[in-house]
Length: 113
Image (cartoon, rainbow, N blue to C red):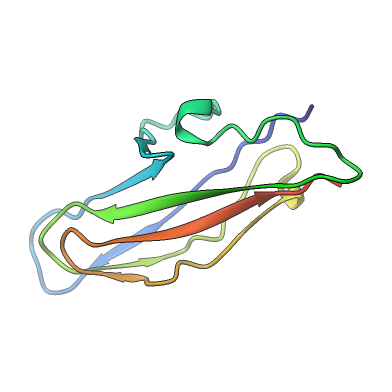
């Protein structure tokens, strides 16, 4: 079993709004805390479990929600770190422009080699 930390780094830009910007990231419908924790948790799908190195992979889907009224643009979703970052890949965000309250998803695949 390999313990891998998937670090999600997002850069959020606002369009002409002085209001603070905020996003919420969820896995399995549960909020992933933005508290700097690097401990994978089963309930928010950040724990990818045990995968057979020679024949397995697992993909998890995460949701990003704009929790403010202002439009935001999500960029920078491409940083994977940990002891074996090459074992992870992610899809690009389908819709990087989120209006107030709008959500988008992305997937992360763990494929140990």
